[in-house]
Amino acid sequence: MATIAFLGIQIYLKYFSSSENSIRVVRVKFQLSPILKMFLGLILIVSIPIQAKASNEIPSKHIIGWIEKVKILPEDISVLAKIDTGADHSSLNVINPIEFMKGEEKWIRFSIPVKKDETVTVERPIIRFARIKRKKAPGLKRPVILFNLCIGTLYKENVPVNLADRSGFKYHMLIGRSFLKGAAIVDSSLTLTQSPSCTVQ
Image 1: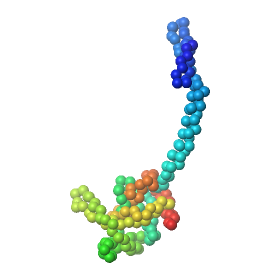
Image 2: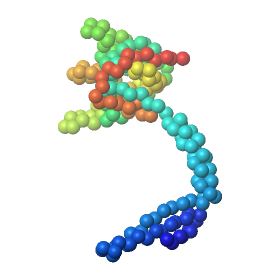
Image 3: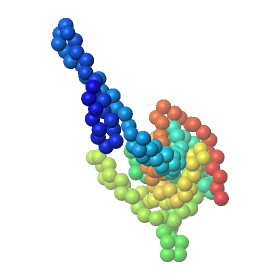
Image 4: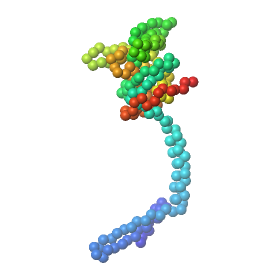
């Protein structure tokens, strides 16, 4: 048997030989010195609270489906929306949009269809115009306003939403990444996971 010491680690080498085929087998055994055991133990004790703190700092995210009911606040308007992680921002179907000036600000008045023969009229200041590129067709310029939106218990204020004619689409609202970022994970196997129930202070 041979012994090698390195950085407080005792390595025992034990040789065995076989007379039949003259093969030598080496069995290696490691043994830590008491000082090294103590040092490694201290490292483990110190690292556990750090790992626990890091895990606690990871924010929990809402799990939502690819189709969800969205509530627009404070108007309390509910619409069915498609959740689209490929879209930068959200979009809403509106009818009869009319731009007007209120003081020095440009505003827009529009109606949101909520039922077959029922609409809700809303006014909002226009924060900018979004240019939408289309293949083999002229580009579009859409007004962008801010909405407070609620999906399940996930509530976000001042979400940019561009206003469009989505009457030809099955879902009249599209929720994009500006709402989802840092707050939600989309499970494409789920739909209508929960009704909007946000607490607004």
